[in-house]
Image (cartoon, rainbow, N blue to C red; front, side, top):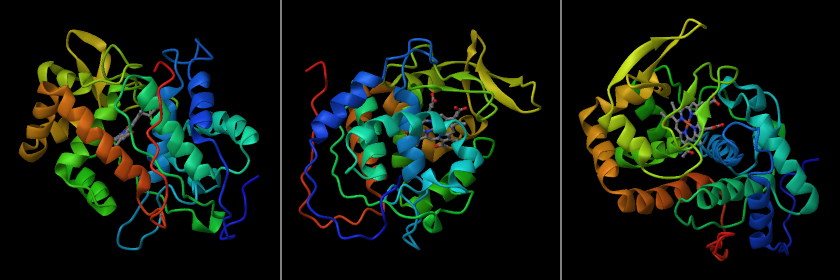
Length: 288
Ligand code: DDH
C-alpha cells in the first residue's frame, strides 16, 4: 500500500546499493520474458514516471509515483508497465521505507548500468503522493506523430534538441509489443545491450514502410524486416537540427554514454524537491 503523502520524512536508513543489487538479480530471472531481460521495461517505467513533468506548472515527474493509480496507470502510453510495477512490488515488500518514485528511478538506473550502459548518478528524495496528483493524459510522446509534436512534449519537460536525441538512444534497449503500443519489434538486433546501436541503425540502414495488421504502420529495415523504427523517429531523423545529433552519437559512443548519463539523471530528477544535502550514489555494477 502506498505511504501517505506529505508526511514529514524521517531520515531513512536504506542501503540503496543493496536495493540495486536485488533489482539486478531480478533482471534475468525469467529467460522466457521478451529477450530474456526485464531491464528494458524497467527503463521504460522510470522514463514514463518521470516524463510527465511540466516545467511551467511544476506538476508530474517521478516525485509522487502517481502511475500507481488510475487514471494514470490506464493511460494508453503506460500499457504493459504493470509488469514492471508488479516486479517492483516484490522489492518494495523487502524495503517498505523506500518511496515508489525512488524505487522506480533506481530500477531504471540499475537496468541501464547492468545492461552495459554508463553510470547514472542517483539521489533519493521522492515522496509518494495520492491519486489526486495523477497527471492528465497526453504528456508522453505519441509515436505516430512528427518532430514538432516531439519538440512540444520534451520542451515542456525542459529539454533541448540535443538532449531529446540523447534520450532517444535508450531505444537501443527493448522492443515494441503489438498488445501494448501496437508497434512490433526491436530497434536493432541486440535489445538487451545498452549501446549506440540505435543511432547506427537509424543513420545507416534503408528504412521502408510496413503496414501493420491493426491498421497502423511503422518503418522496417529493408534487409531485416524484424527490426523497426517508429514514425516519429524517422520524422526526427529527417529534421536537420535533430539529425546532426543522431549522426554524432552514431559515430561517437563515448560521447553518447556521457551525454546520456547526464540527461537520464536530469529526466529522473525533474520536479523532485531535493533539499540539497542528499548523497549522490554511483552504484557499483554487480560485475564490478
Ligand atoms: Fe520509448 N517507446 N519512446 N523511450 N521506450 C517504446 C518502448 C521503449 C517512444 C515510443 C515508444 C523514450 C522516448 C520515446 C524506452 C525508453 C525510452 C515503445 C514501445 C514506444 C511506442 C512500447 C511497447 O509496445 O512495449 C517515443 C515516440 C519516444 C520519443 O522520444 C519520441 C525515452 C526518452 C526513453 C528513455 O528511457 C530515456 C524503452 C527502454 C522501451 C522498451 C520497453 C520494453 O518493454 O522493451
